[in-house]
Length: 230
Image (tube, rainbow, N blue to C red):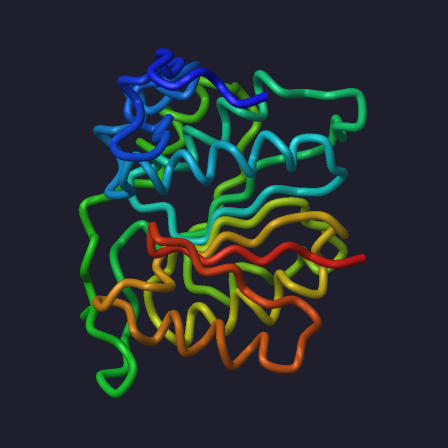
């Protein structure tokens, strides 16, 4: 039944112009306020992560973040794993973080607009402390270069993967390892798919999924999401 003309819209202050819960609505607000100092990922993109992570918390499998920087979005994922442990949630689930923690590796000027050493103001020890303050013992940190840091993890099933590595070769390597290990119903979230600063990221995702049954969902936030089909 349609609302009468002129009746108030619930939570009208969050319609700017459409409903935008990342502007301060609900439980997400406190989480984002905590992680904001440690991430370059905007509120709307963090809300996408938060929403999909809550859904993925009901799946069996490990959680991956490839490209960690100072740990802000990893902190967000740790909050979700602490507060949304549904009956189907696997008690052996861990949050695996992959990064050099020393900045960008070598880049390809034909594909990428970042340079070696970008985002070097990070530390694996500081990230671990931030994560342990939220969910102690949850995190495995894999410091080094992708794909070498995937070695030994071939038996993993993965329920959720946040891929924020910016450059072509690293996105290709993440797709090649993560995709075949995804739990049906799980998510791959590519943070930098649509950004003009990361043209190689979109090229890598499009090429990888060109012959796969999944079609990346491109969002107005600049992200792309892949839902693993059964």
